[in-house]
Length: 200
Image (cartoon, rainbow, N blue to C red; front, side, top):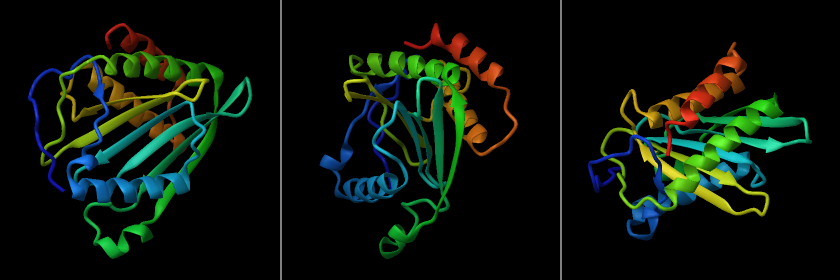
């Protein structure tokens, strides 16, 4: 799949509004439909926040956080074993997905929720955007309010050293944590706190 580069500017401090290019390009529409079908089989629609990465060539991956009770929250991560775009149409529904979950604290869930709220709230009012390219990753950030309203912001392969790059890096670290890797939660919380003031 080839994406169209619309505008080459910015995307350092804020996410852009999520654009459904499937309305304009039938290949993207077909991909999105298959991706959503696979995603909905693996993840509940009842989530606090959700992060999705769609690389051009590497396998897609995602995580979300769900509330269990007032003190516990569940982190669920899924990793596609193959890139949905690179598999022939008839085999796309048979792609295997690895799933991981673990219980996380209110502190971590709340910190990520507040960060995603700030990032996705601002994306709804920003008008400039970058969409895709021939080699990169599209990142999507979703936050669902208590009234079930969902805000979404996106970015494409942010440059190193920018707040958006740190946002993506934190989310990738959360994926590793979900997989059971040894990650210091205090370090993640500190990085979230430091990023909060730099992201718009």
